[in-house]
Image 1: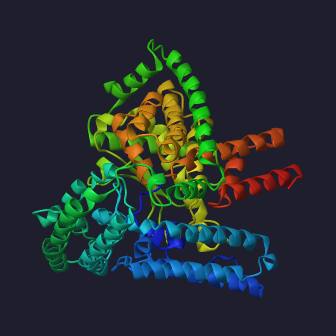
Image 2: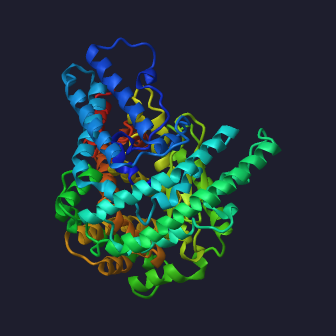
Image 3: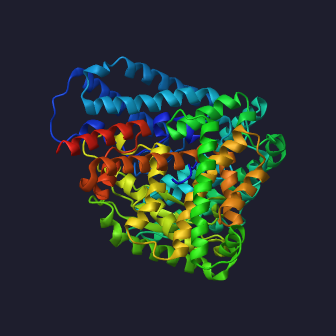
Length: 601
């Protein structure tokens, strides 16, 4: 999965920034060489440029996220007036888009038009559900705003002063969040209490007696050689003062508000369908994340079928390794035997890094186009690790100032089995998310919103598909690693059942946890965090398996159509050649590619 959003309301705040925003290179400059464009194309790209710049300006966090430093001293405005202004600007943008004659555009620009329209239309449809009234979740929010330091570049004094300015401005952002949360309570729109019970401990980690122990102080522990001793001392002194006098009191007040005025009034149901207009909201989320029109019932049944198929494959692995007990007992063995676990966070990190290095030289077996942008392996920050997923990927900056990073969870190494390392690394790093995002940045003629776009079904579908590419790469020579691949495939199949179960079929949290535990060997820590993730981000987890099934279907279709002319490397490169798009667009592209190959193109 991609890195969780630093401030949850950024998702709803700016439609075009819902995909990670990047530094503002105008779309027109990405076209190779001077090209004479029709007035319709000029109008289209002018709209792309204007909306891109607006997205960066209105979401400073997302601008910073990918290397644009112009707004590094500020946060998004979360006032109700600003949110409505952004919503209106999205509606105005769609009207401008519809005024452009699509039929007068080139084939490439028709695709750009369609993807842009899909994004805007879905974002506008989403406005009515008022997601901004739930700005804090168990996986992130203003209580973890310090996570921004993970993506910022601290190269000069101004970078540190910008961070100081952001720290000073944060109390106002916290107050804006509190105002939204109060409105959410009035409207009956809050996250489930079972999730919000995790948040007080997260807030408490910001209330430190020693400012140097604050996560916000992290940048001031290291300076580049270009910053002299006097500046270092002054910046450190100022940081300590801002943390002690501004941030700690603000978080202390936020904690009191959360405990007394918010948590007791959060909803007790876990189902999105129980919120106001909740059934329509879940239907929207399922369609939005999967980029299909599949119903909750249809998705549920796909999941049940996939669970049965994968269980049968797991039984074969159990027999291969000579385990005599039931499949459930085999799961318990995989979750608990010490031989599958590292004893320290340091040893676990080293093993993840070694796994990445093992994968790298095998990439030529599954792709002819290797992206230029590098990637690294980093630990998930300690203050959020207990409440977050096993790993995530953070895309690199468009301007090349930061590589992509594969973040791994080192919290409780005794619950992080070695058999999951290969499929996890294939998914989050290469040839999974890093390939798709780095390749997207290298699309030569696409506007910026296309080069950095992120449709979950395509992106996570590719990540899950990439886990199976380990077979093509010769990485699954150990049966326990193959069991890990099946466990991860099962994990995503289970999601289809439990997500729809909880949000559309009345399942309890305990029933969902039990179903997950009965069908997958992931550890209890991961299972509980995962179920809570599906409760907190309804529908998102449906996209993985739906996307993977479509890409796998297209691969088989290509193989059958092309026979001996089929090369898995060409197919994989072609899937990535579009950038992130809805699944219907990808299918149309692959069908055209097949026809071209058969015609000798």
